[in-house]
Length: 124
Image (cartoon, rainbow, N blue to C red):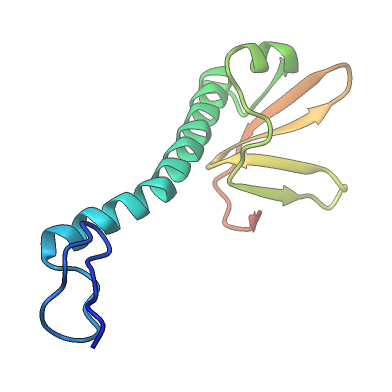
């Protein structure tokens, strides 16, 4: 019978034939390393989404909508490609949202920033 080795430390495994790890510590270390790459990707994306939300919230303040220069938003660290969902209006406009704060690209390099609390939003 062929001896199996631990997927983490490569020591010989004793016990059940379908065992992959020699102990719980090796199993935890292996799975934590495997999952850390996924977590890093999610953490980076969430950081960008939260930054976008914070920037839009800062510009909007207590107003219902405000126009801001797109270049100014980008210089603040706004990532235009990261958003949580979109909203297509009856007028054919597409708003991109970072959580409840959204933007619409309008003429002359300007962005219209809005806040939406409606539940009619489409998931991106």
